[in-house]
Length: 518
Length: 119
Image 1 (spheres, each protein chain N blue to C red):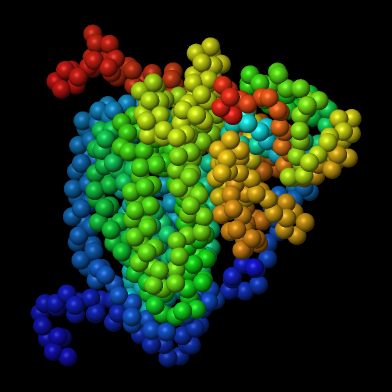
Image 2 (cartoon, rainbow over the protein chains, first blue to last red; image 1 turned 90 degrees about the vertical axis):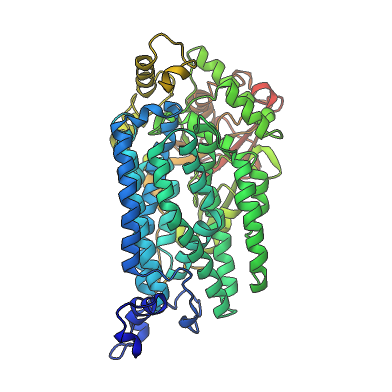
């Protein structure tokens, strides 16, 4: 072909040579033996050539482009560290959001890297394989750059010292861990529906925007710069998610009911996982970006509504139980913060009662629910704390067998009543937080009967001790009195006060604007 | 439905009673007192009497709530695994039909949590 003689390839040719042309037809092995995971899920692909890669990125340009971004990113990290950037954040309470991100989100990036590496081997279509491999490398870069962005904070704040160990063991981190383990143990097409479509396309804005805008609003230059650097990758991942779903739906009508069930499952699992993000937005950011309810309206109800309208022509309907999320958006973040507040003996971050201004903000953002159901709870706890009886719950919570969040959510039609579902499978009773999680179990009970539920593992004696203190210190590696408990009076808080006094020796707290400017 | 897998797929349940060394799990939910964020997951001996369970265990668990001292157990309503239930305080949990991973709901009419907010 003439193109072989050209010195420079045009983009289209380059893409063809460096992606699709890297594949070949098998001769001495059967194709289904080379790609053994392609058929068992029941997804029928009739023509892999119909796969469209919306970005046409090849590895050589990928390296070049990412290396440029990385150079700038690390220059900012260096400047941040040299200028003691951690002292310019809005308030030390903000760092607790980073502790949650480091232990709960960064490990997911790593798991996504592993997942995409695996499925990037399993498709017989070269276009899909290359796209998955590219995303695998993105995910690996994200975990690395996140760790580097946050490592500076580890020098000055508690609770950031052992994130990967905690991810595997700490009770609330079993929520993200079980989510990703569920996806990674599924077949390759379900994995893509779970991660590329349901998470990256439908829900990722609810993870990414709150954390990165939260960083920007709270003076965290290191994390917000990571966010900018990852933004173009995330856009690519979202586009891949949409391509994946449309490709599968267009290939064969038999795929539709299978994909619908996966969308139902992964939307619900993602929604439960995002409760942690919602709590972070409403309670952990000293300078708020927007409320969880507002974010849900913008990023799910409006954007997701348009998406599912578009998918209607394939016979896809909006995810099952979506109406419960519209009700839940006014409740779930308060319920989760109350949970972490009372179980703060077993967290690697601090919790606190919002100040008056923050309580008023919550009342304003949640006019139908906050004053009626949640404000009295927080005000009571504040009174108890003032009396020196800061409330901690010393028991262990009742967990959902599927999402592994404690069953703290209330009935969609009654916010005063906990939502409980149970199901007996082969003589054994299992408990769930919702219809959504119960349905997921009933579809594949054998997958979930073996769930590693932290509470039950502690009671079985598998976590290095029978008492909470031993489990927290020895098994979780949470340093008691340093990493956990109430924020007010914590070592983080005291250090913050000391720094601020050094900067503004003669000023009372809250009136130090002039000195900061100098 | 079974798990969609490349071959035969089996697993054993991780939380059968035999794994709890003679004890069993019991979940207890005190309605309209959501200051306790979820039902309590408690480890109990099946031979414990219901009365001892209440006096020695449950009352300690809910001690921090201002309503806990006001509970009149003669007026309390119970549900055991969603079925109406009348406990025999002198009998063991096992004899009361409270088996492993049972969910017990306690309703205390007239007590509606902190400032009536069901907290």
